[in-house]
Amino acid sequence: MDPLTYERMFGILDISIIFYLDGGRVHMSETLATARSFLLTHARLLERRLFEVLFEGAHPALVGNVVRAYQNSDGGLGHALEPDVRCPESQPLLTSFGLGALEEAGYRNLEFATSICNYLQSVSDKKGLVPFFLKSANQSPLASHWMHSTVSPGFNPTAELCGLLHYQGVEHEWLSVATETCCEMFVKEPPLEAHALLCAVRLAEYIPDKAMAENLLDVIATALPRASFFKLDAASDAYGLTPLHFARKPGSISRPLFTQSQIDNHLEVLTKQQLPDGGWPISWEAPGPASELEWRGRVTIEAICRLSAYGII
Image 1 (cartoon, helix red, strand yellow):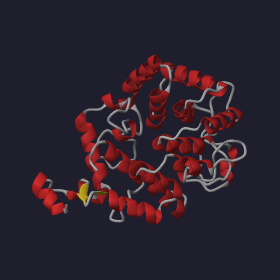
Image 2: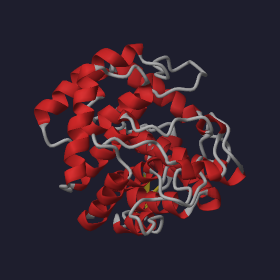
Image 3: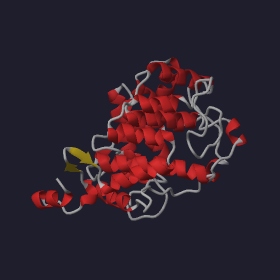
């Protein structure tokens, strides 16, 4: 069935935001098709594999194979997996990035997750907290916003790592200690910063203790409106995390924190941000052209996942 016939039958006026049938084959919307073209042209293998898994029915193990290629002998992930940190050495921040890709793809591997826990235990303090990265990261190019970052252990990124490892279903001494520490820290003195609160959301999503998950969510709901780098106003051009970062899908644990209007406003803006090349832009200065394209591949995957989850594409 051609698109015009489909439009006449069902009253669909904007073919850029639908799927249509042709001889029994499902075709992509224009938005998704141009995003795919951008990824094939400019993105690295990880994001191309994520697209295959999320939109073309490929097996999640394809993403797992790519992420494991970034693993060093110490068990951690390195090699600029987080595109703004270009070092080859293992870093907690890069490890968190890789675990996030596995969660997005729906891939679990207990042996791999255990090796990650062993690495994190080796670089944590007595309470289980880890830093964003170790001093070795400063020996390689970094984005400017990371150059003066502390190497002190903290809630961010430890809480996100804990949440993502709970998603893997792994049990480990380090994970138990770090999870308890993060929960105690957060309930006692929640950070008023959006990135740290997003880590708390990831922990609340997957922590086995559902009562604690509700406690974390209550604290997040109180702290988020006052948090720096939280962008509730969809019309704002400032850098920040939006409701779509926190409620990635309609079924996300933090979705009740936002009104339908707030979600809809950000979905509308996100749709309009797609560039003529099919990808989405980044709003910060990357350390180089390769890093910029790698990040654009990542934010493009994130954009089409959110738009798809909420039924826009």
